[in-house]
Image (cartoon, rainbow, N blue to C red):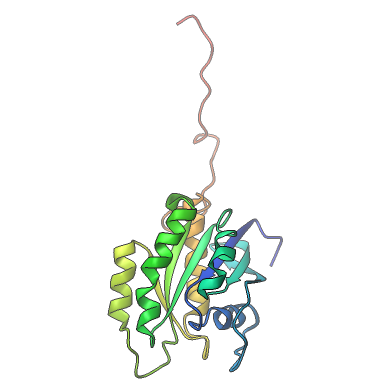
Length: 198
């Protein structure tokens, strides 16, 4: 990969125990930790990915889900380009809390300035509580894209981050709706009006 053309700040947000740290470790290092301590405050990692012909650097902030750390989380909303909202498909409370997180995001940052995706993690679990259809319905109601992931076996991890990155690129007009790079030719560039008497 060459020098990154763009750098995007990404947040992973959701209740404690949904697997945010495991998703991040799988994405950045392709590793899975069976046991790990809950994130205390905020962790930070970077990775360069190739999307739509461009090398994009992602600065990913792994936020703590515990209520007592929410005041820390709110401090890093500003300047963020994208948010991955994560819930555990086997824990209904983590799913129902997604709308609470949406409200917190709205209170801290303008919706138009940031791109969100919804992720149902631990989809490798056979006896799941929240169905894929429920997850998709939630995403549709929020008008955001939906992905299912498993940090355990890697399912959907790259797709979620690449999908979010592509949506950010569209919003920032780096690419158009079909994924092609936007470049202004001389004929497309706005013409300056000549000064005259009429």
